[in-house]
Image (cartoon, rainbow, N blue to C red; front, side, top):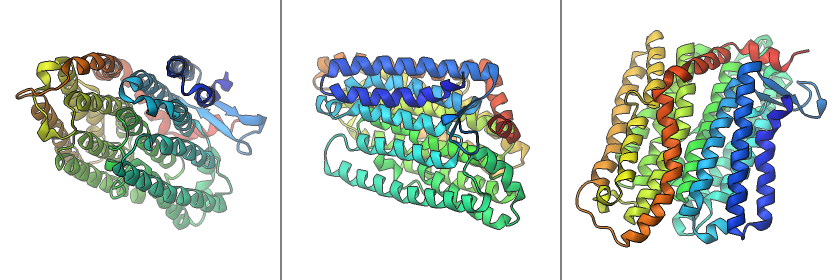
Amino acid sequence: MSNLAVLPIALPFLAGIIVAFFHKKLVAARIFALLATIIHLAVTTVILLQVNQNGSYVLELGNWKAPYGIVLVADPLSALLVMTTAIIGVAAVIYAPRSLSKIQEEYYFYSFFFLLISGVSGAFLTGDLFNLFVFFEVLLMASYGLIVLGNGKAQLRESLKYILINLFSSMLFVTTIAFLYSVVGTVNMAQAAERVGDVEQQGILTTIAILLFFVFATKAAVFPLYYWLPNSYTVPNAVVSALFGALLTKVGVYSILRTFTLIFNHEVPLTHTLFIYLAIFTMVFGVIGALSTNNVKLIIAYNIIPAVGFMLMGIGLFNETAIAGSIYYLVHDMIIKAVLFLLIGAIIHAAGTSDLNKMGGLIHHFPVLGWMFFLSTLVLAGIPPFSGFVGKLLLLQGGLEQEEILVVLVALISSLGILFSMMRIFIKGFWGEAGIMDLPERKSSMSLMIWPIGLLLTLSVVLGVGAEWFYPGIESIAEYVMNPEIYVESVLKE
């Protein structure tokens, strides 16, 4: 059964190659992409159920025993995130034909899409740092292809910025891995976790940890390294922005969570206190950015940043309750960010503009769209009983346990700022006098956009309303993460 661990990577990778051969036959490509994503979702669901029932699956590629060979580890955390990725992939494939132009679809959108899903899944499942770097590069190459679909000077400018910043962080990533190997003699995460306690030069190890955090923080858009994100996530098509907002920054957050609970947990007072202060600044500056613009897509892009701050807050607090909050919030944010970017794409399509000052009256012609956006706003802001509230409640409880009052207060104020920034869109965009052109055509295409958004939004609501069903599983994952010896034993077993 451990061979199942490779399927979330191999299936979308093969699908991306196959669909490239008939990329201009759009009907066939769409059907194939939908079937492939549904199969991928079914496989990841089976893996999650099996892992929860039987424990982690460790696949040693080529039958090379860890730590000498490449290992894939489907544990409770990675299996959960891979399944969430698959769910978002299904929604994106359904939404894409309604959002992309014909020429954008024909230019290998589905190939790049599957390559992105494969890279993200691989980053979640890999058991060693070098292959984490490899899968980062896979997903980044796919994202380069996706971000340049389209035209315009703004898109070219932001694409170049996005590529350059990621090239720099990738160079730093592989250099830092080399430093770590020179100190502990391995890139296998489990064996590195075993050996860090025996390293006499703890100062060098802490320096390596900070450098590695810098790499992941750049990809996760932690303050002050978030400057590249908002405009880069605004220029692509809505479905591409949804994939980026839901998945790419979350891989960075996952990498911080994994490495700093498993390997670099020897200087918690230094490293994790730094995380708390960076989380505070990330929340504050993200909210300020969201409040400073009238571009509706840019408001959603800026709201990625405080969410990263919330997740980093839980990692910095480093207790079981806070880690459970970070994991719950991570899953919640992957889904709700996909919902919001897809919704904003529909809103821009309905209004014919992304400028909030030029919108108004959309609720009269698109009431379902309006109330879905309102509900999504409540979910994002953490209003009870939705999933954002559950994750934030756990984070606040974890903060109070550590007596970190400042970060708790900033988190509460930031939540109000997020709510206000989103309500601006609802009030200014949906209320007032209507001024819609080509209404029948827009309404006919809008109905097809609503379905994938509704599916994701329903899942997000269930994640909050049904918290009593989901929380025990998240709590057990947090307990697992806070006991790294379980991971080490499962990977390095005799």
